[in-house]
Length: 346
Image 1 (cartoon, helix red, strand yellow):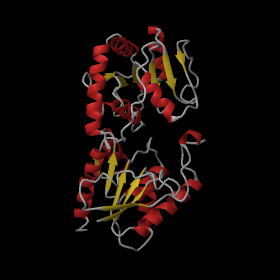
Image 2 (cartoon, rainbow, N blue to C red; image 1 turned 30 degrees about the vertical axis):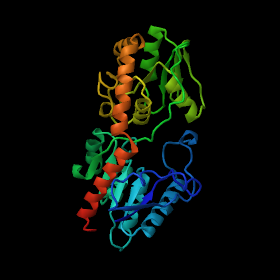
Image 3 (cartoon, rainbow, N blue to C red; image 1 turned 180 degrees about the horizontal axis):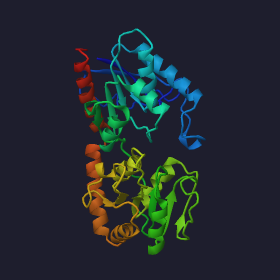
Image 4 (cartoon, rainbow, N blue to C red; image 1 turned 90 degrees about the horizontal axis):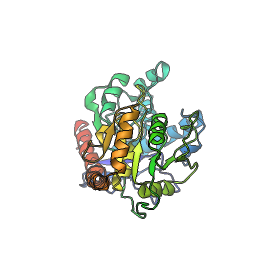
């Protein structure tokens, strides 16, 4: 079956280098080709608002129309804006409805009122939503009023990350990377108590209003390559998350990347972290907002090189099996088979 792929991060400039999962399907029942975004997506670090603006919606609308126009079968979208515009476009036309698979469907926070009503209207007929935490199935089921059967949990995937740096044993430190819904208040209290060298690579917004302990460095504006270097050189990585009932998921990218790099990792048990880390086997999970729990976990890993190595190597093996592009490609093939069969496309 023919499918067009509409991904906001693939545009006319990088089309020749970005393949997403089009090369990772395990069989040839489906043919995928990418429809590039008309204009490059703005770097989220430079966005002044977390809400999609009117001009951005127009570009999403154009992108969705082109994906529908070019397909001979169905459409695969990435991010929640594209299935919303395609769903609305199909409601506004008399053309035959085409199958739509909404991959990487993460809305961040679920709005209420008119935004919720528009989301329910535009997404009502999407065939399959692919989410990256199990809790999102329940969240979106209740928010959109869509049967759970149309949601599929597939772990977030990431291509292999070259290991180009070794752990800094001369000047060891803890690394904490990322910004979204991070609990740096609890984290700072923990590392301050332990007085261990720490590097936090995050945004100014995420640290706003907090007092940074003297043993913590906070380099701002660094590139992805610098973040990967920090993660590889650190003695251990921590992903402290702030539990918020309205938040759908957070931290998965940082967790997956750390595991693929074979790093010993500690994460807060919330926002789906437990879907990725098996406590005591591939990393450690700590309870939300618990300074004592975090102190104990950090101290244990910091002082036990054998435990760090065991957890890091187990994390790497697990990530390569479950979070790889090939693993995601196999899941995608299964989902496309299911949607195509249900739509009578064979």
